[in-house]
Amino acid sequence: MNHYHNKPKPDDRSDNVEKLQQMIHDTIENMEEAEESAQFANEQDRQDIEAKNERRRHAIEGFRSEIKDEVRDNNH
Image (cartoon, rainbow, N blue to C red; front, side, top):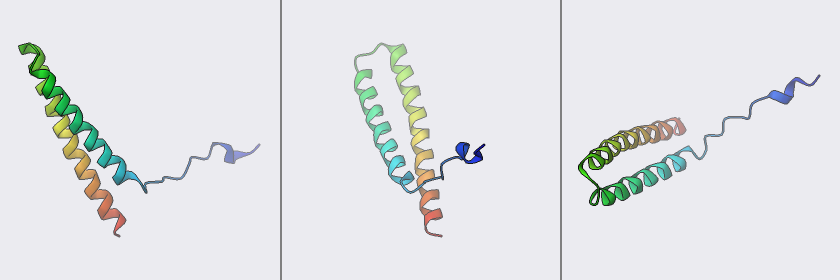
């Protein structure tokens, strides 16, 4: 029986920074679209949108932190 059949793929992190940058870009676009739609929303929906955008801001901070880690790791 061949035991190599279930071998995991090697960890290719070469494009992580690009992926993270794209995630930041997409998240910012989503925030902007949500803010535009908030203009026409009722008070509850506006509060929900603001709460979601706050979570998005935290996610962006995390993405940026990961980018710094990736750059630091790639320079060693």
